[in-house]
Length: 82
Image 1 (cartoon, rainbow, N blue to C red):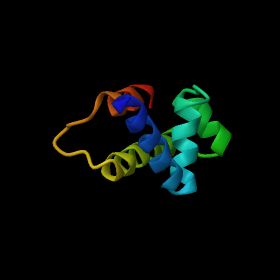
Image 2: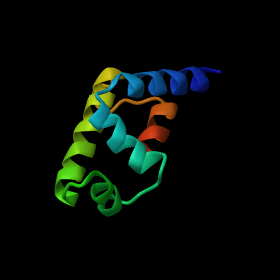
Image 3: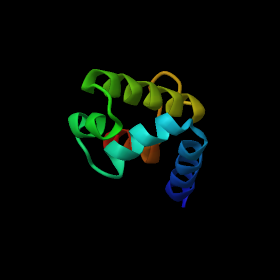
Image 4: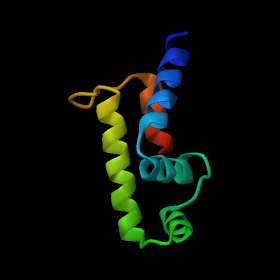
């Protein structure tokens, strides 16, 4: 039950991120695209995409209140996917 609530919270926080962040996260996590293909889909370089994805992950982590690498099992699963 706790993991489900954490997943719901994570999804809610993803929904609150800026559109660019959501797109980057979605292309990798949901669509399963490698960085090269995700970059092409957005019309940007692979380097730019990787930077965007990294920043999106950082913002999501901050929204979830992670500190010192502490993450719940649900959040670790999201990180593994992203």
